[in-house]
Length: 283
Image (cartoon, rainbow, N blue to C red; front, side, top):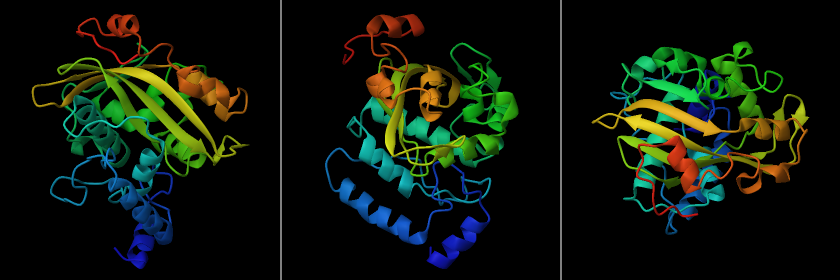
């Protein structure tokens, strides 16, 4: 796509759409593409597989086809694990990244990663959102539902406003990685890490380029076709948001100390996922 075509496409798409390169200059995308290529030449750097996003027979977009050049580069620069291409960790990571891509850029009826008749999403044993209700609210609003209203009030945010809020805070992307997988399908339990360079603005608070991160645990149930039926997320977002607001030191988030406590601990994993045959954790 030429720079003129990209500019025309970006003009029709909200720049806040997370996980895409909408609103980013052609020159910056091309520079990122070159840097990304240098990473893929190294062992352990495999581009996340979200499928062929240019295949119009599979994908129908809310606005336009997202590009993940900037997001993939941020992921490569900050990831802490090197999962083998044939590992369960890589399969799970790609499935979740594809689900997130669909949740951000497609209407629910066009999602291919979920069992549409059974799909639910919840956080910390809170309200369970079903199907199109979850899709319309958006992942941010669902996963931040139930926390202190002074930190984030999901009832006052929309799908678009929630994406705008975090895109403004993290203009270089908000990468996510799987750490360890504790059980195979159909009930997949795993730990994860989410991080970004805070070089934007969050509710008037200007970041200084510091790395902010959160850790957590998830339990995902899939059907016989590996379609997602249910996602349960367990984490503590309050400390993360307090850092963004300038009310907590960023050091408190390092290595999960301000996130989900002992998420890699066997007893924690077994308690959250009693169906899992948890063993040989890497902690």
